[in-house]
Length: 409
Ligand SMILES: Cc1ncc(COP(=O)(O)O)c(C=O)c1O
Image 1 (cartoon, rainbow, N blue to C red):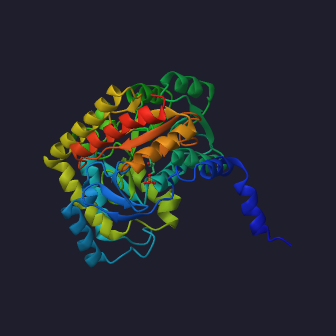
Image 2: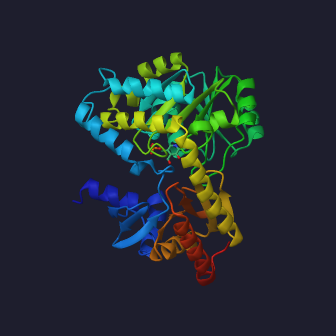
Image 3: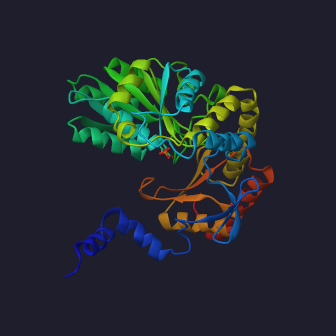
């Protein structure tokens, strides 16, 4: 008899998203470029992948802090001081650096309080279901990060109603909230920066509609943290200037170049989350050495040096977006360091990424289901420690690619 576990794998591979992705894997084994291993890293944004030295345009380390000596030595010092792990759920105990990091994060962010989770995904899985009950409703932007939608489904399994609204459309949000009455309160969830397209939500309009309809706005600003606004405090302060009626989630793994996620919130909410947020209660925390590195990154972000790093990043983003537009590409985003070039067709998107890879530039070919069907993009992530010559090199390769592959632009 065939073991059920073998039949299970076989059947799953032939259905749904696995079937779709498998098709591309089999049809484009060379161009697919997923599941790659980096065998050497540095200098700068160079790396070796599959035996080829390439410039990495796929890193979230927007300010290049992953290679900063001060951040690395804080991590080493943290290892010496605290060892490799916390060894228990924080419900029981956590190292002092955890409390320090949360207090320092809140001071930098200008929120009353903060709670750190091991990742942004786990922040969303922990906070969203804990903030709503059966009489409440979650309404999320249809393009919000997968972890928001999955968190909403966890809440749904507890009896919470869940709806989506059309991307960045405050009018549609209002219609849905109106149609869904009565409810006790609504949690309206959006991304601060949409990570595949780099576009930003109309936060002010969304907050106005939310507040007028018994709602609280929840902004996952994973890609805005450390990049947007004064001292990198993110998209909420940049666009709204305050946190009234807003919960903000940020990343410690992207521009921070450490590990983890956090929610900035009133102290009362922090207390509630500590009592009712499952990944916090039943899971382990960020390893302590990273908390020391987070404290060092906060010193850098809070100092004038942030402006230098940001100016270099902005100049790099500008060089790339100006160059790509001049070549006739349709550039999505371009305000943040996520610059996506619309290619469209899935096969063409995979071929385009592979073409650049062979010429020494790693960018991500993103296809359905991460973006809409036939909405494939070349996702280029710009860092402040990319060299101007590297960006020129990428633009040169994009120009050749357009001619040789005849990709739509
Ligand atoms: C908006 C958003 N939320 C969450 C995540 C996941 O973050 P993490 O890797 O910390 O789980 C991402 C990752 O890119 C993101 O863009």
